Image (cartoon, rainbow, N blue to C red; front, side, top):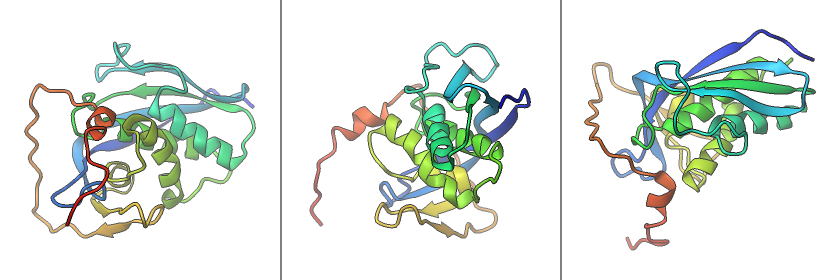
Length: 203
């Protein structure tokens, strides 16, 4: 089945590893994020028509190959699990700088999962989208941790230890608390950085 109607989802930026909550505590950041538009196609599988930068121009760095983009990987995971016929075409618009520590890969994965979910005959509850968004993030970060994905999906502050996944704990955020981000002109690749970590830590 083919449908020219695009649905668009927005996912906010996020900060992971908050305080002592390494890999398990993150918060959403208002004002910046990624957009993913999705529509049904007659062809099987998930494809990416275009990856755009914040201005809507073709993104100079990100791949539109479906096995190399967190958005398409997340949407494909959802589509397979739902057992839907046909496929999905995506347009990804990046509003978050790459390798900025603001959950860029997570936001694309979340927005794609939400947009693809809206195309289902029976959309899943938002809680069920986490595991599919995590499949996209796993590709980018080289690990299964939800400290960026969960707050981008649910909003606010989220406690998400790996032992609880796919369950998370949404924490109340006091009124009047703001986050201020200082962003140096520096790019840090998450997967490469994680390779430098010790496998075990003393207490």
